[in-house]
Image (cartoon, rainbow, N blue to C red):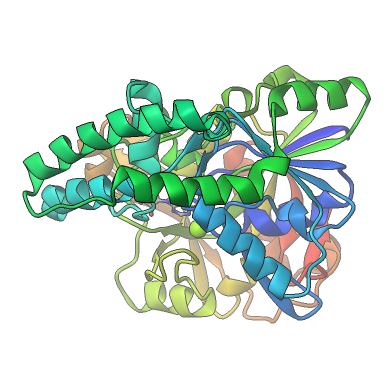
Length: 425
Ligand code: IMO
Ligand code: MG
């Protein structure tokens, strides 16, 4: 397949990085098109663990080209730190291109986010505090936005920065009189230093990607976050600030969705969520803790324990529909192996009515009571299974149920963190 996309269908952390890594050697170009260093992708192979955040997973393949496209928001300091850290693990990095249209995260974005989140109190979104939402907001608002291309024009950059820092000081001090920002000069010097190190990678990635498509190059679009965190289609306002479902590919890269041959929807065999907002199948009990322990469900970016629960087919099917998937990858199935029985939420009861539509309003979602289908557990170690027919029948039944409820074929089943621990159909 020439052009493939990998998209998370839940609230992020579906182990997308593993599927991307498996597919990366079949694709010449790997593209990140949304989000920023709020993402945390863990890739394991050869006994080494690699933690990626902004860099596309293709970076671990020396012969692949990685692209950070226009839809990504870039904290250049975080990007440089990540490059240094991956290099220090002995990886020979592949080629990297960065879009000149990508927006840049500044210290005032992080400062403003901290204030806004604190003001929300117990309604806090529970963001990753990386300045992602405030940077996207400035992108849409236009007045206070700086793109990577601006950093290559020092006089223009300086002029914009002076105006923006003045405005940001007014805004921040209005919220918190004790707030203080680095000076224009400090920010200018820091960012000129960052761009000096990154400038050879900066190009118009849209033109590049179209040229490569014309040449017949294969491409892999690497999703970050998940469909239920999508700003338009997710559990607003407990979402991220970009289109993190399949909807974001076109806007975030300039490549129309009809040019994508195959979309793989990645799902965890259960549910996790970090941050606030309703999560109907969440388990605040021993089973929830068991899943958290077995799945090591602690955030890669922030270290927060993830909220865990049963697989929610209502929410995930919604993610699958808006993303337009061709098949699913069922991840971390082995995490459920010790349970006597496993449950899948197949419908919600909301105010006395059964529905399989995912509610668009937060109060309805908060009121949703999951209606479960209970399946027998398999109680067997499945981490060495390599063919679908070798799964115990109960595990097979579980996989088939997920497939049926999502109305999608299964393309991959992952039964352990290593590249090898994958059943590919
Ligand atoms: P990956 O790519 C899980 C969540 C945050 C918070 C909300 C908004 O690893 O799947 P933000 O900082 O984006 O404004 O936070 O979105 N969130 C994620 N949750 N995985 C992610 O990325 C996430 N990126 C953002 O926890 O609830
Ligand atoms: Mg994550």
